[in-house]
Length: 261
Image (cartoon, rainbow, N blue to C red; front, side):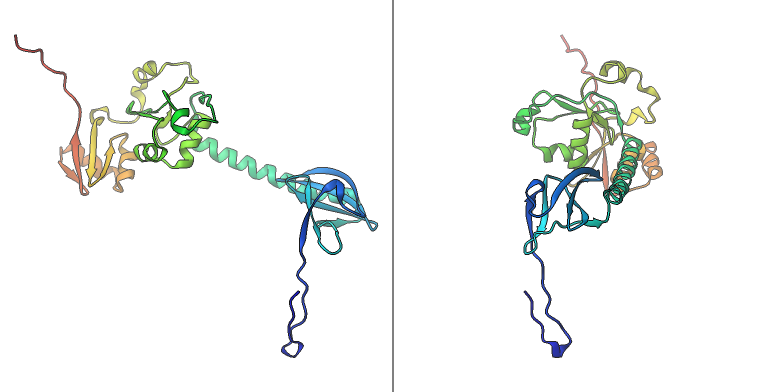
């Protein structure tokens, strides 16, 4: 209860308190039915010659502490509440479709996700499981600390979950599992010459301080470095040793010559 001085043009205001209550235990109100109402359930009650729809994600609703009245939308008929619930549901379905469209247009599902033992710790759960870069073929063992995986692949924590859970390809990385196109990974890399990258530069790294960026594609690597792809292209073409503060290092290993007898 809050009190204010009337001389100051304020009035006494009652702040209601709400209590949780199971839908079948609300006093003086008859539970009628539950309908879908978007992201929540709509529990409909009858009391005092009117219908009330309380929204909740569970079978518990909120009631006002003093009157024990359900908190919700009040209408004269059930049909009016059902129309309202349908509006909530239609809006929810539309938003979900938009999210699915946006998600599918940005990333594609390319492999079957792994079957994981969720009760195990991450490092135990991910033994013998790998991320693979679909451009360079670089692999990252997943049975290491998540932060190290994120830093090596230059992806977010959420994106790592999406890649593993849904078998998505994102930022040139995916789970090294069974491919949905039926190709083995060896066959995939043999037929990937159509991929828009310059394989002469695979094995090139750009180093600034503790940061080490591998060449993947011209545009993705330039974006990661914070420069234009044309600046990077010219630096590589002209065999520069440095660009934008990054040292350009080639780490391709040459085949060893036969030992001299």
